[in-house]
Length: 111
Image 1 (tube, rainbow, N blue to C red):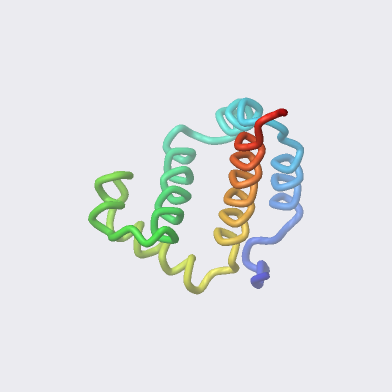
Image 2 (image 1 turned 90 degrees about the vertical axis):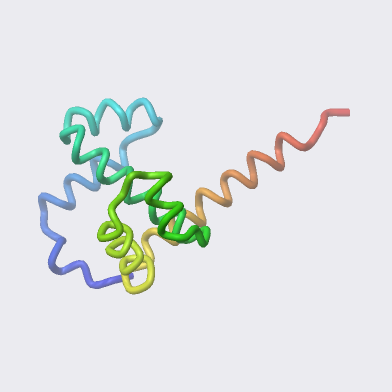
């Protein structure tokens, strides 16, 4: 866990409590469409994809082509991956685990 002192306050706590109440992707679309601009949401989604591509060892040129992100954005995300709080790694591990469980369940055929 990182030091969140620059970010943490009662308003941010409330936002995160709201996010934790979301149950489905559709609920996320509804909430974030109301909460943010299209540009803000696109920027966050782009950074998450850039982070995943960096974690999966894609080179910058492939990430630019695949996401439209600038090399400055890619560098900033890469810095967060390497020196940040570990938030990206935590989430990607959970997603990988969930996908493995889903794929494992699909691979089991009923007798």
